[in-house]
Image 1 (cartoon, rainbow, N blue to C red):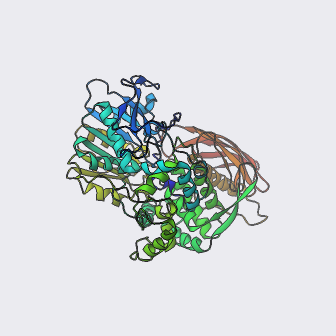
Image 2: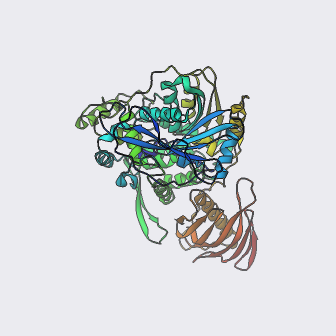
Image 3: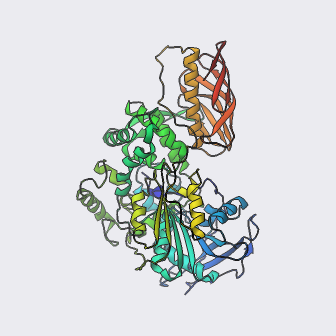
Length: 614
């Protein structure tokens, strides 16, 4: 599995904006931060937003010359400020200024709700966004779900000697440089995913300058597992929680059991199938154990993927891998984003420098595979959950296997951690940063509180559609007690039930066609929920779906051969699951044909001249 998404981006449903990139300068090393634009300059569409630059040395010990110019965005609090909060994105590889998009008034309004009375600061880490983004085009555009040690090694060579100065420890010192340049004595930090590791690294290195910590989808600062055993052990329980109270029963009675059994089977006996492309051509994809783990874990970032996965896994368990491989393709292709949005090169430079690994930082590359094999063989029973030793390849050890020395040895600050209020928010469906990790971190703080939101995956504050966790943060920032618990939010769209099948030559009746139409619409809704506006997704059997922001168009879209839907559906109302309305034409070689109206997910019309509704 490609490790670049191991900790995941911040998938905010509220903020996805693009900034232009800029390169790093080759000036002589500096002894400390320099505020390049003393007062900054207005930027973005949000009144009061100021953009400035802070110049920091590439190598703080001065052995390698050069500097990095950090892009900083500051939005002062209206009225009397209660404090300053730094918004810290994930990856590693995301630039916080790009992710949080303070230049959008809509985004700024949301963050001001979360942090009432606080000045908001977001800056792009070195090597990301507008702060000298690192680029490795081949790694960035890779469509492999398996580890990519060759591409990673080539990336290291292309970056050159500066690759050694992008560790989490360096990122934490850059954060301190921005704090100094802005003249703020103590700061609150909101970290998401990898951003929690960075926030905690800063707290260890500069505890006297931390006011409070908000940690969303927590990564421990001293995680020492290069094989991601924490994730592997969490998968079955997270899937069972997702399917609680019979939620997945229309698709499968045991999603966790099927994922475990299928993944272990595919690890030794992969399935291949031709997957339809939007152009009408087909492409052969392979379903390996790592591919299944990848798409399963990534479902905690995509509500549409999560709702389509149970039926796809169930079909693959029965030998038909087409639906699963379509999800694998969509998952892999969605990870191919511009460097400025998530730099794969920066991800590699940071995780491979941080470690730790089953080798010392100076171990020659040729000696590492044997050390990895020995370390995996020595793992206690259950370390990789219910999966075989093959699953260890999802960890950063395989990803960084050929990264040049030094690899895996950049420690963090010595601490101690500050005695400050800490609120950790965790999703019950989060597999990449499971709740057990958040609980461990919270236990280290006397004033720590853990809030778990069931049914929600990674990056809770961007995915909790109930708004319970967001209200809890708002109250906590004002000094109140956060909610002790949150209910499971309703799903964004409806679950895809088990895929139907027709016998060769069978012609469905009007009633049977109606049932197939409803199945096809549910599949289309889930696939739409994985997409961005303008994306085109192929049907399972034929046709395509064209996604828009508030709906989708179907062009002979089919999940069952012989039953095809064409028409346009749009989201109506504001309740959850989302409701769709529109008109569709039913055609195909075997279907009962006609025209159906969809009104808030209720279907009615005529098929072969007969009135139908359901």
